[in-house]
Length: 326
Image (cartoon, rainbow, N blue to C red; front, side, top):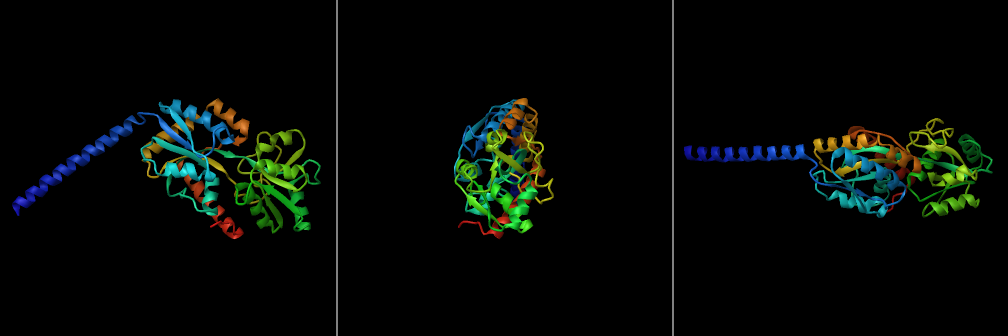
């Protein structure tokens, strides 16, 4: 028995020494992080609106963290391709990514290879897409209230276009329609150009849109009745948000930096601080202004809570509208 006890004591001692060694190495590795370039996976193509604000942010974060952060583009599947790739990367801080709340919508609409809240670590929110409801400048509605009042008095006669069923712009209007018990007819299109053409050609009465219609707004061909999201559009400061108008607005297509799940708190904080500092860079502000993105900061905990709330709200609305595609 004594021999067994001594042997067990020796084994336990060796295990303890090895464990302490691994802990020391882990702590040392964290202290030196990052020691090499970091890859950031974008699930959207290069050169688009998302990329225009992302690139200066990543450039400034590279300087702040002391290593290059290199963007890899993996578009497709409404962000499912890029997120599927990031999901299987090591949780060592050298593979991170970005996405938006539209990925939450996607996982309620169809089968995707990820669960945004279970398979990733949220590092920080840095911006929000700005969208709104546009009508033709020669339409009779000068305000969103007038538009809703007309729709209420003329059920089934008001059509609005969007870039697809279940997209954030569709859900924003559908949510207001549900609150007001107004019958608005949704006409979905594959992409912005045909949805815009439908409005300009008089085939729909309104277009729930991102700010790609800005040239038509500034030229006086279209009128913006309301903005979705947390902030007014700086380019159109007099246009109220749905919240300003007293509606419950679930629209928030917020952009976040994420990593694979189980990123250590220390790595999350290093990345968080680097990207937070990057938000102060003038080039990032310039990029957001070019594509009308609202600069909105949330730390890891607050960004995670924000996404949890959106996930519940988007999920309920999609179920209520029976939009899920199996």
